[in-house]
Image (cartoon, rainbow, N blue to C red; front, side, top):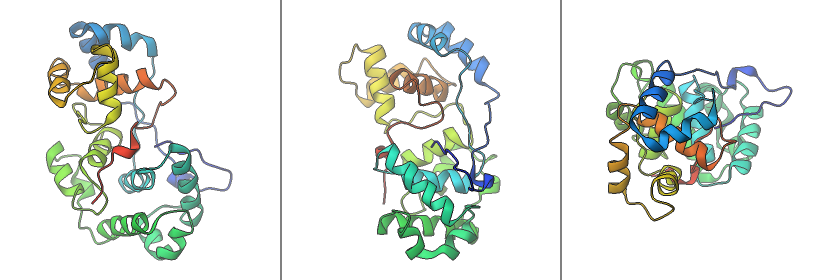
Length: 232
């Protein structure tokens, strides 16, 4: 979910870096418990997950990036920010379907973005309460929005709410990371992934992030496997 701002774009839509408070403790615990993490974590020094603070922007960016390449997603996102510099629900609704489509969004994604904006503007989601709700309760609310499936909701838990113990089993990057690092590249089932991850609790988010990084060292603040987002 990397947003590189071009000159003239409003800073309001830029991500705000947040370092998870639990990160150092999680690293120490994972390296104590897991021989793969003991080798993997030191390779990335002081790098850490980069959080994004605005719920609406985070979810809108996820919808834009579904099932297209990161390059295409970045291009569409930059165009959307030019059309809606503040990237607020009201601004997106005011822009309307025609202007959003001109940003390179498909008809379906345009509908998804407008539905997301409508949910926020009409307060049919309780974004101000998500910080106090448990993971499954947040997921249950998010998947009521068109275009948001469990994978997208889990990415939101990781990158916006900075939840420490998310295991996104639908994410191909996680499964591939487990395959490469724990099974010498052999195919991995969801059951295998759960078994490996049992040793990571309550820091499954952190372990997942390091496995992503092991596959793509440059991806500091983006979720791999954007095409895994289940849409409705």
